[in-house]
Image (cartoon, rainbow, N blue to C red; front, side, top):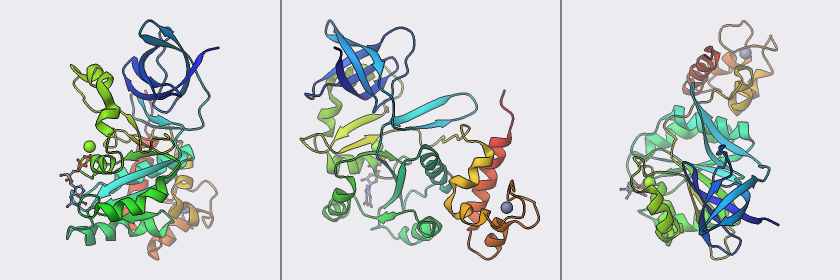
Length: 296
Ligand SMILES: Nc1nc2c(ncn2[C@@H]2O[C@H](COP(=O)(O)OP(=O)(O)O)[C@@H](O)[C@H]2O)c(=O)[nH]1
Ligand SMILES: [Mg+2]
Ligand SMILES: [Zn+2]
């Protein structure tokens, strides 16, 4: 009988696997293939001080991004995604939209945390997020650093008992949130990760943090928000993954309407009535064009 474990970090072909008892050790996949991601449940067996991963259990879900050249996984088996953006620095709406489309495509619930509510730029940021709230996406406004107690109270219930993948641009407040909710975060990354990380160019990799002693609530911090390729998505599926467009696509004259130039388009009619935002429609067009490009 092989031991079970949870992949809590990955560094190339080195993975950190956590045992049910909470111990962490370095594991390597058997053979050439290296197909584990953080959040995977694996079967492994000891090999000296380290371990060999023999088998990856079937995944409940997998969030990934794909550009023209490669696929990059964020994490597997997650309960929800929290996209953290801030009033300052100004966030890219395109990246936000892409993250939500990827979540929808993977069947994972997503919500938005708008951080730095204490800054005057909050008014403009709130305005930019209105179409998201209007299409049913939950937008939570907080000040993780300026009002940490209030932030903690707001987040505790949303996160309890779940594994939440935290995504967002640099400077939004992801580390602030992890340090607020997992005060021993640095210790959890631990010496193993630090050793594996030293000498590498990138110090940012996906990390799994437990927020409670019972190890029932987790935050997963993952880089890669900046280049959110969606090449895995079929162009025809795209409107169905954008709730505000989807709502009006049923009114189109043509069942395979691309909502670009066709007559009798329900989405463009909604755009004209102001029920679909200009920016969302523009982002849709940009992604559609990307997906229509031939692959090599
Ligand atoms: N004004 C303000 N600054 C914040 C708040 N939360 C975080 N910051 C600051 O924003 C900067 C970036 O935060 P950090 O957590 O490192 O962002 P990350 O790159 O997403 O991990 C830091 O200087 C934080 O102190 C907040 O609620 N209000
Ligand atoms: Mg950070
Ligand atoms: Zn249409």
